[in-house]
Image (cartoon, rainbow, N blue to C red; front, side, top):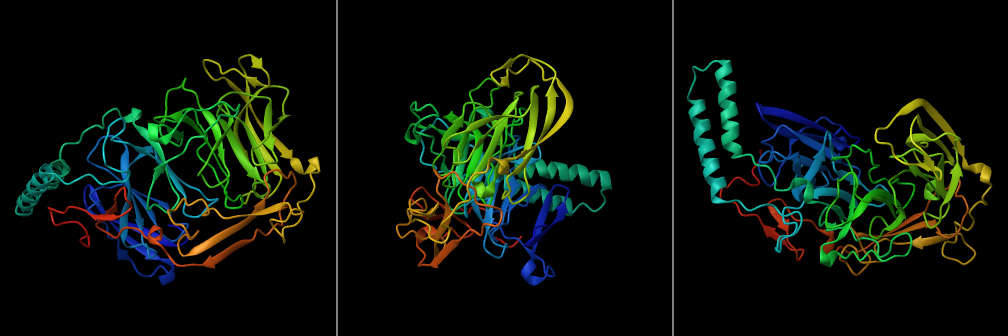
Length: 484
């Protein structure tokens, strides 16, 4: 259940469900059957990923492979009719590698298994696999088996369960493991609400000004850690609605997401909703935002430390602050829910091992924790000046600027229009070190405009190709798009 929808799964067999949806606009009194471009309800697992922008992002597990992957679907504005958005999104434990960028509308990040990694091909991300003759034969066998079972009226309960299990194996075909699963994971981002996905552009330079030499045309990009293979507890991508455009994440640069324990990982920051990124640390950090994004606080969390670092200029420069005489493992940094205050709480446990080096501590072979600890930080005592000129952003004597995230053409439109409107935000200038204050009422200007091709998504039974056009999905089974 979310603020806008209630989802109900109705079992139709031992291993499949149908999804029913009810909307707040109907008072949650009516339920309708969700429609998909293919019978993806032959699974007992689905996850509602996001409903914050009225459309529903729905993850449905792929039961044809043994690895934890699934398909992402997005609904229309009513939450009933779904079209395919991205395939082979991975899942780690109980969480799907999918994050909503709360600081900018229409922006989402996901990790997916790239089946064509390292190959020359013409298939774009998010493309559904073609239906083959093997699929047709498997479906025919499944229907024949189902018919035989329905004609067997004298089976006991145990036999029915056993036969359903056989039907499941036949219907799904041979369940195979994906090739080199952990070596083909890449991070993708969408700036247009799932209509198209692309790899994340790596920073041109690292934090020391050295060229990264990483270019998308060479198969190199930025990859971000989320929940899969995350035994080191790296912080997932993080954003807040009050901190317009700001995103922080832990990741690595290369041709894939590197899960190896000894692999080089850093912390990255974007202030334009994930379009461009900069490296802010050579190690993984845990992070939190305050003062509407005007104050950033971060600290190592995979090794012990005696200090945190903070920034008043959205990550351009950082100042270290000692918070403890003895090294501690910091589990998290938290703030009030809206991230508008300047007071933070840090909690963790003391480090009972290893040798301290320059404020941070070298990681021991085995983590040894002591007593729990909680520390409060109040940055209002630094007495930074109050920001001025919010009513005249863009002027030389104002601490605020006007920013439109659609000026860069990230959506493929040339009229600065996205989903029928031109959006302009008022935000603090990066180089001005002042505080916004909890009572700041951020201005957002929205001007209606004509939609372009970039504002539309493919209808049910269609999928976007590399040229951005919608191709019809082959349907030899005559099953796609049926009301299920």
